[in-house]
Length: 154
Image 1: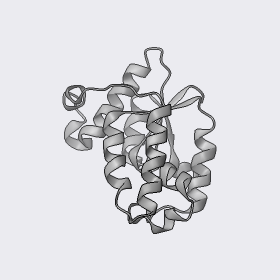
Image 2 (image 1 turned 60 degrees about the vertical axis):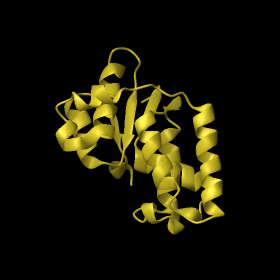
Image 3 (image 1 turned 90 degrees about the horizontal axis):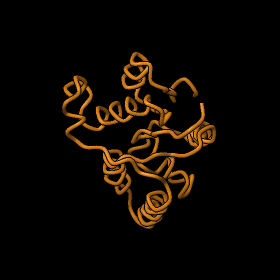
Image 4 (image 1 turned 45 degrees about the horizontal axis):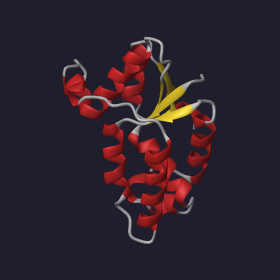
């Protein structure tokens, strides 16, 4: 896989927290299921893609989750998130496109928007999805989207 990749909220949080300080991973309550080794696996997985592409819905989730740690870690994590937002391309995606998808009731807004953007990517943009959400990965695979399930990399 090459080209740009959308990284789901939990993995993007892992990326930002680990890039701030790898020791913060075990301190962050929203990353209790992840290890320093997972951060390294994530870095290797992301390196096969040309860019991380951001979505506003994912960023809103990550921003909220990232702040759930005390300072000085919070400040360092926020700075790393700011750096990512300032440097990575962002695709505007409407909430309306997400709520109009059949998957909205099952997957919620963010995942429905992710699926919508991946569908648009099939039209030539060549977007891939990197997710730790097995249900989302299976749904994306069933729709023949480019998907890399992080759980298979562990």
